[in-house]
Image (cartoon, rainbow, N blue to C red; front, side, top):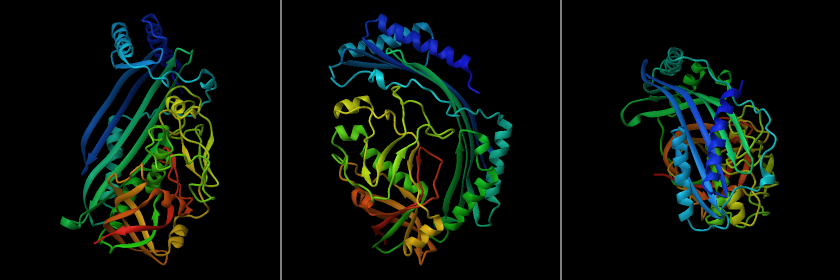
Length: 443
């Protein structure tokens, strides 16, 4: 249950900052205050490795003198510090250059309805219980198979926070949220033949986490499966991205249709609105009001109301992702995406993972990507990878030390299918993605 007294207390502070900005001459202002608490425990080889309590707070304020903008922040909530922080922001704004696109969002776009999104479920776990949970998780991994030879440990995290945002247009709202996770990483083999892999679970509500033992066993299973990995000769072939890797592919698309890339003309999808960029069966949309989901929010980082809307339908780009500044730069209207997307969902197909493997037939299954080889301007894509070679829809052997390459424009248009094995552990919800053909550079 939300602690309304805590939210009210922080709203008083934010309103104080907004009033101070007006008194110091600002024509407009906005402020955000975050207070976070948490516990993080890690265990390795059956012993406690780290135990940390977190208690952080911070306030950021942005002021406008006409079209001039200045920002400052502090973690000291005393009245003197708050006044000094506002003064610093005002000083910066007075010396800044005019920017015709600067300013608060349009008042009629601000959120006025705040549904209960079921975001707050504090976990009543103490340090001792968290330690035992981490050890249980790691033990399950270490004892799963004789080939598990070492461990990078298991970690239990719990976090709860309160955020209040307000601006001089009269918007003032706060909410509480929680986020908990359990993860494990182990190694198999020895020397040059060492392999590692991991697994994790994350949720707003601790009761929805995977059991610790299951997380450990899955980390071990993934690690064992990578033993005796080999290289591949250079070739072209179909590539199946596992769901957690497919989210990165969609992330590149998100970056390309986001306002900052577009107004800077640094996107391979520049001027693509209304054009076919994906096969006609692909539907990508935001679902910001899903109860309990990791990306749910009633409003974006500027207070603009979020809404369910299509980004891509029938393969056609229907909407950019814009905050107020980028929208003004482009002569458009904010889409409620200042700060990012909210439960971006790639509508799943009908095939499960095994059926996706059968559709792949012979090609590469990618389960890990390395490096940052994505050129957002040209769309050129080249990343280190590891995974499994597949023949006749059956995994044959693990592969490593290869590079997968292509151009994102072509890759996106050549998506063959999207699986129903959706990964719900993040803000991008997508199943495995099969791309018709990519270049594989190997030995």
